Image: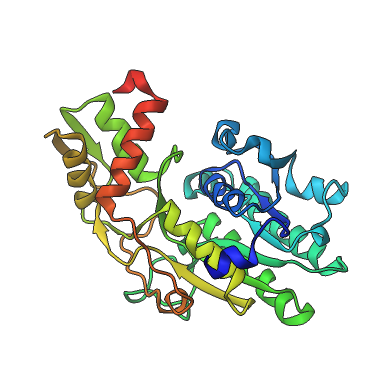
Amino acid sequence: MTETQTLISADTPVLVTGGSGFIGSHLIERLTEFGAPVTVVDSMAGGHLENLQAVRHNVHLILGDLSNVLHLKRVNVGDFAYVFHLAGNPYIPPSVENPAFDFHENLENAFNLVEAIRLSSSKPRLVHISSAAVYGNPIRLPISETDPTVPISPYGVSKLAGERYVAVFSQLYGIRAAIVRFFSVYGPRQRKQVVFDVLRKLRDNPNEITVFGDGTQERDFAYVTDIVDAMLLAATVAPAEGEAYNVAHGVAYTINDLVRTWCEVLDIQPEIKYTGSVRPGDAEKWGVDMARIQALGFDPKVDLKTGLTNIRDWYDATFPTSK
């Protein structure tokens, strides 16, 4: 039995915001394996009920915007031992198109949550999910948590501001909180971002694919079950004094590497074309220093080819006509 299983068990109530999303649903599956009673708050703005199909009868689902749910006291954060805050806009493009939406989803909800924890008589440990977007275009690689944070998108700004509220509330009011900065997470149930987009294009046309940029952009792709491991370590092992943790896999891949690996997994040889330009707000290269989360025991296990194979199987079962 792991330390996490000892600390999170049938006697450990857990709140997960945004639990019907891609990452949240995988976290909830792990929590229910431990036997923990899980409450989910989700507006369903970006989630899918089918993501919770395997655990639906083991969770208490509250539908609604997080700020409204807290205001109407439909949930009391003091009833929980742990809170995992994943609710919000998880992508850069919607923040560029509608920064007001992103502001509410990522900053107002984060503030209202930490304020509710501050006012509660019993304060849970909080794991606040953030993003590598807080760094913008990094000044050096690999990126360390102590490097400058200069976001280049509204999404990055809202995530950074949310982080600062969490850190300051931890320092001023004693809220036990850890911040987890995800880089490029991928896995089954993800329906956006480059890993999914490449697969969708290749399933639609196995003879030709067009990708953004010139193929040399670099990302550190972390498989979702490894990400769950990191969140659980942040919840149960971290000092939880408002500190931040970079979480990735530890290997930088170019987009060319990703496309080639997908072609291996799908056993195809398409013609590859490039747009030559990237989307506004996207950084060119990522390389990640994970010493801080590794000191807690983080050891990612799923390599890129294995992860893509798992996604292929999920995708073909979910979208059988696309195969």
